[in-house]
Length: 122
Figure 1: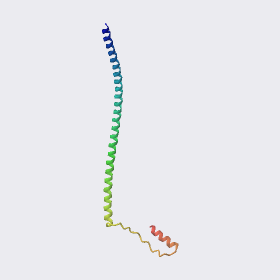
Figure 2: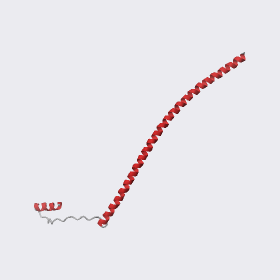
Figure 3: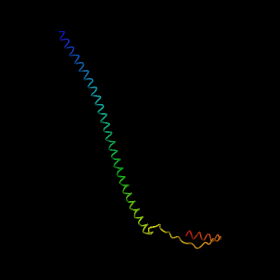
Figure 4: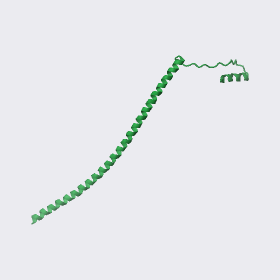
């Protein structure tokens, strides 16, 4: 009978160890489940951030292409204007014709000076 009692006691100890192991396993499982849910939430947040970054990148690229097109058009206009200036001026600096006022002759009369200045303004 002692042998039976010792076998039964050993079996009960094993069962208790198994129960403790099961409880530990359940706790570890619950912890892993929580970690998985947290990781899944973080992954979802990262996906949303990646979508926003891609959208911003696409908008930036579109803006760059628009600016490149505007720059190309401006360069074409500058080239046309440079040709026009070269053609009209003979390749050098354009000459401006200034109206020659009647001679001043360094007289000290205020009226003569006023007439000279008035002619210059015209």
